[in-house]
Length: 260
Image 1: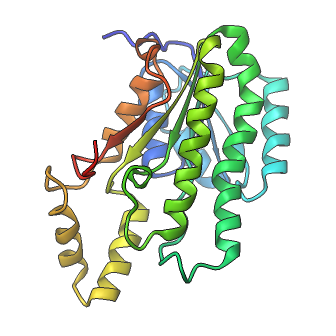
Image 2: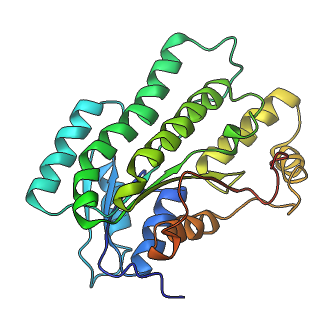
Image 3: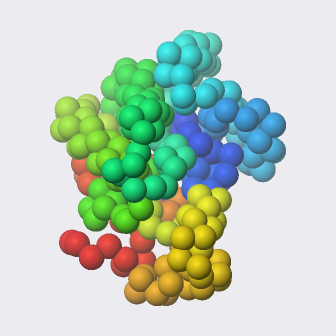
């Protein structure tokens, strides 16, 4: 299938590891020009070196705890370089823990890094998307928007807010050839999953291997996802072939989520 992505430009957030990095690589293989964005310049350079050299790839160093600085850096980049057809919103999840004991600052920090920064980037990128009559905004969030996950109180709360922001935006932008969708990863082989397994191990007294096995047993596929499997779903949603898919939550979780 020709995804018709050749020479499109994509801004991929959180692209130095995990699902973000896998998405940058997958889009680049389809001929997309990638701009990586994250806070660690050395890691950005390392990922940049892995992208196909015959394309126009670059990076932006920005910290998602500072939306004002993010807006300035992305706006300056666009003014000097080019606009973007594709935005992949992807930020590391909040720390695990029960919601009742969460500090107010945890909610504020997560809201800033996820919803505020998503909004800043959408506002910066949408004008170009409108002029091209082609735009794809894809938010990597969590299956918790369908089924809250135990021990992830702040994350459940903020992910739900992002999902509702996304659906509202999809309704407003669909008329301009811009789609807004959410990809909901399940347990995926990333650094965050490793930390979640360690936390479960320390709380339950299980070994890390036992904790991981217990998590796998909640998934009909009986395994964790590879970051590349989620990246493939994102790549399709970014393509011309997905033009009539808008405002959805797509679980990529091996069937773990119980709801429809």
